[in-house]
Image 1 (cartoon, rainbow, N blue to C red):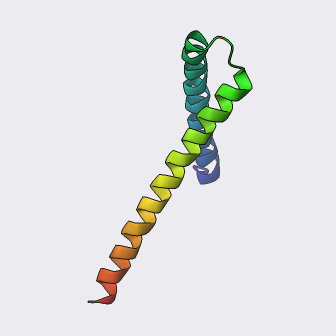
Image 2 (tube, rainbow, N blue to C red):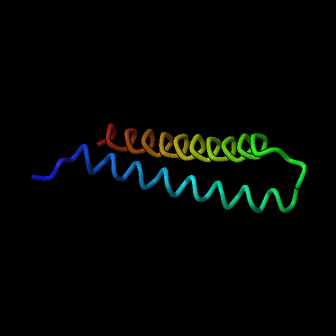
Length: 75
C-alpha cells in the first residue's frame, strides 16, 4: 500500500534538492561577477527574491480565488 505522507515527503525533498542546486548555480555566477560578495549576502538576496516571488504568486492566486468566489456567489 502506498504511503501518501512518504510520497509527499519525497516530493518535498526533491524540491529542496532542486532549490539547493539552483542556489549553488546562482552562487557560482554571483561570485564570478562579484568576487568580494560573501556567500551569506548572496544567499540573503537570492532568498529574498524567492520569497518575493512566492508572495506575488500567493497574492495572484488569492485575487483569482476572490474573483471565482464572486462569480459563484452570483449564480
